[in-house]
Structure formats: C-alpha cells, structure tokens
Length: 372
Image (cartoon, rainbow, N blue to C red; front, side, top):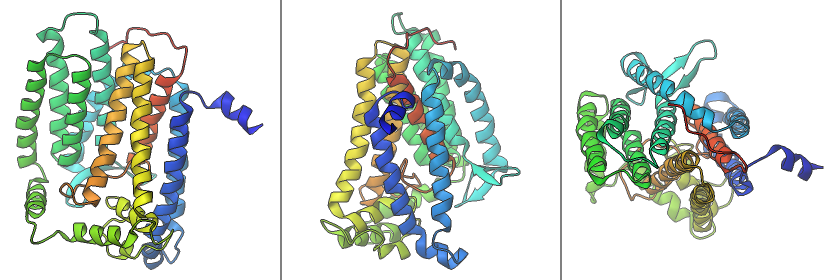
C-alpha cells in the first residue's frame, strides 16, 4: 500500500528523496539537541524550537513535492521576472530591511511576521535564468550580444547581495562561473565574469554593511596565535566527539557555541555522532551532488541538465563551506547547512531547489526551447 502510494506520487530520482529524508531526520534530531537549553531559558519549553523547525521542515517538503510535480520548463518563464524582483527586494532590504546580526538582509512579511531573505530568491532566479540563456545558445555560436546580458545579470545580482552578505555573493558567483564553464562559454567571458564580480562586489562590500566584519574575520583566521571564539568552541566540540560521538542529545558545546543550531550545527553533529557521523553527513551531500549530476548525464535536454547542475552546485558548495567553517578550514561565515540548519526562508527555498532537481530527473519530459 505505502510502496504503491510512493511510486504513484513521488516521481524523479528516488535516491534524492532518500537523501532528503535522511538529512531531514538528522536536522530534527540535531536542532532539538542544539536548541533545548536555549528554548527552556527563553520559552520554558525545550520543544518550542523543535516544533517551529518541524513545521518549516514539513512546509519545505511540501514545496519540494509541489515543485517536483511541475514541468521544470515553467521556471524559465518566471526567472526573468524573478530577477527584476530580486534586485528591487535586495536594494529595499539594504535600505529599509530588518537588521539582524549587523546586516539588513531580511524583509519582514506583514501579518505572519516572518522574515524573508531576498538573497534566497535571487540565487534561485539567477541560476534558473542563466541555465535557460545558456541552453538556448548550446547549438549556436556565442557572441558578445548574447554573453554580455549573462555576465551583467550575474555581476549585478552578486553585487546587490554583497551589500549585506559577502559569503553568499561569493558562493553565487562561483556557482555561476561553474555553470558557464559547463555551458562552454569562452574563457574571455569567464574572465570578465570574475573581474567584474570582484570589482563590483568589492565596491558593494566597501559601501555596504559587512566590510568591517569580513575584514575582522579574515584577520582572525590568518592569526594562528589567537583563534576566534566560535572556531575554538567548534574545535572543542569536534574533539569531544571523537570517533563515535557522545551520543544524541549529549552535546556540551551547544551551550557555548554561537548559533549551534545554524552556522555551527556541523560541530554539534560531530560532537554527538562522532567522526563517523560527520563523514556520513559529508557523504550525503556528495551523494546529492552525484545524483544531481547524474540527472545531467542522463538528460538530452540542455536546459534541464544545466538547471540541475547549477542548483546541485549551489547546495553542495554551501554545505561544504559550512562544514569547512565548523572545522576551521575557512573564515567564519553566516551560511547555514542546507536541509539541516534551523532557518526560515533558507530552508523553504532549499526545498524548492531540490524539487526542481527532482522535476528535471523525471523521465519522459520532452525538451522545448525555454522562453526568456
């Protein structure tokens, strides 16, 4: 009965569904552990944030289900409108948005009082539109008239994001570079993308809200004598975990780590589930990347293949950066661990992105030229 229902309703790559299920279960377990003490102190209930996060996980899975049932070609038609909306929302957030952690990255949605990060919409819109533009030119010769709009949109969106969030802007620029490289864009335009991104992104960083923070974090990362507090607590958590971990719910450093349920959730995973648990989490993301690229290899549809590749790169690179931060390999950033960290719009847009990847992996959808 259950097997028949799953076969009838869950389409696309079943291995991706399994990866999502495993990461979602891990998310609920670790978020409950990481927020228990804080929830009791602030809300007098250890389950408060678990219930809140659980609702967001369910909504994320629902969005994933809806998006995977839709024809992915429809997203190309909406991507240009979403790009213009992203620019407006990013600039509005910078000027008038809700300020958290010394940055105006959020817009508060009236009535429901839920914060929304325009950068999440911008990432999804840019990758989708870039994949559509590249797909349209796969069998035609690239020229300046075609490539300049691609490069311009990438630089513009990344520059707007850099006003309040440098790490997300860098990650998105790297994703666009990889996607254009796969799309066989000439080297001189790839160089133009990097140069333009560095110039405009650097200027946006200077005039924006995060230049001082980025400078301090890089300096602290390079200073090996004085380890940054977050990094030090992450080291302690990882050492406490050993090979097999202290056990579920037994983390000690959750009471000392800043944002143990978000930025440093991987350190809590390693402390409770050990090196084996950390490696398993890493394996799940690499497995997700493999299945996302498998959809590319199995597809003779240019737009679907590029879209799946771009979204897979974006999610997995972000996951790798989050894990690298927790282990002290790169400077501290504010990037959450996709599908695992507690969050609002980030979790929802991750569900949408994976739903689109699943839609691409569905069989039997003939390719049409994307409408731009």
